[in-house]
Length: 296
Image (cartoon, rainbow, N blue to C red):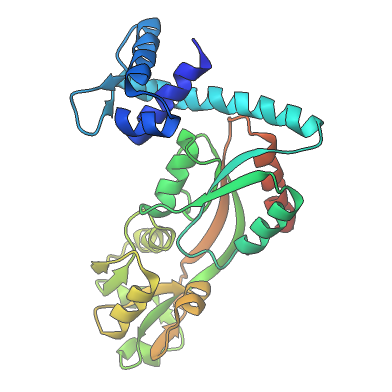
């Protein structure tokens, strides 16, 4: 099995198109197709269902995908180690970030890392599926690491290192009856209407867990992926919402009442890495920088 065959397979799997993969690899499409067929013959089975649009992985292809990423990452790590021995750390680090990450000084971390290792390329990326999707991408090797918030709900094979946390406050209009209370028992929110983020987002998971443990329910009237829109919808009376201090400071919450709840849900940001993958020297250096900045 040749490494180029695995690289070609990975490109088609990620692009879900032979045309886009050939453009990404700067190959003639017929050459790419020949390479994939050679890999399929060697492995004894089809890797792609070519009759679907976009191209879909077969069961064999899905099984090969994480192994191909691991093998190619190991080769990159070997190259990085040789480059580091010659005095220059190189490579690419793919970092997953949430849509709001003000609890962590990510800009400061990236600036310092770039100053110390200018030849390494950092590629940050978000995910519409929130923290759940970020964690899944670390698990399958799409991302090297991620900053995510999913309390106790990560895929197996990951290492979760808590970095920072803060309580989630109930946000409601100033005219809402709950706005007159200094501390709101969670039981008073049973059956209430809420504006919230989709399933998979960190704050949603934290609040859902607190309600589940208490045996309470709530109605999610609107789901949105934009933090300022959550604030606007609460202000307009569509429902209450749970927001952290960092989310509030990032989006503004004028004319809203913000009250603590007991028991309180918390927003906790963690560093998510693979428990089994061999990381490149560039990725390990970034991990060390993050952990050094958040050491107790």
